[in-house]
Every structure is written in C-alpha cells, then in structure tokens.
Length: 90
Image (cartoon, rainbow, N blue to C red; front, side, top):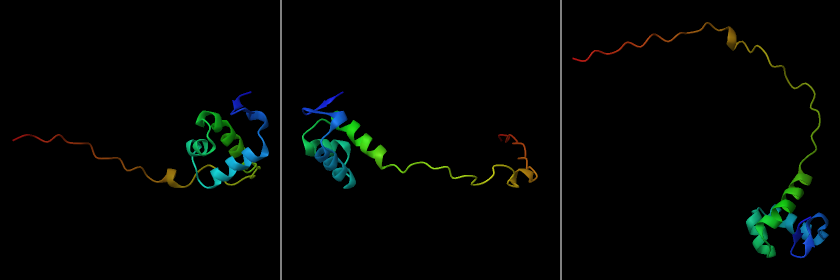
C-alpha cells in the first residue's frame, strides 16, 4: 500500500476522502487538488480515481434497445463514379 503524507491510501480518513470529493466536485484537476492538500499529484490520483469509480452509476442490462441489420440504405442502387480522364496538356 502507498503512503500518502503519512496516511495509507487503502484506509484514508473520511475527512481526506471528503475533501478530495468536494474539490473534485468543484471541477478541480488532480494537480490542483494535490496542490491544495499539499500532496503530490501522483499520490492523490489513485484516490481521485477510486472516488470517481464509486460515483459511476452501476451498469444495468438495458435489454434489447434495437436491432442491428438492414436500414434500407444497403439496398439503394450503387452510383459508381465516372472514371477520371487525364487532362491533356496543350
């Protein structure tokens, strides 16, 4: 486990997690959060990523949304391009 300013990353105090979450909600980047907390960005990044993963909505099975297949466009007649004719120099 990494140590973050004397604290272990796996068991951060609730206050640190709350601070990081609040700063992230304000739109701060990882670097800005690290500067605000007086830590290295490389030490804060795993915590920010862990919090972001917690905030993601759980994926549910949407069921059948639509069918992939013939949209009708494939059945249009193909318009071939006329062959390019080289221009003659005068």
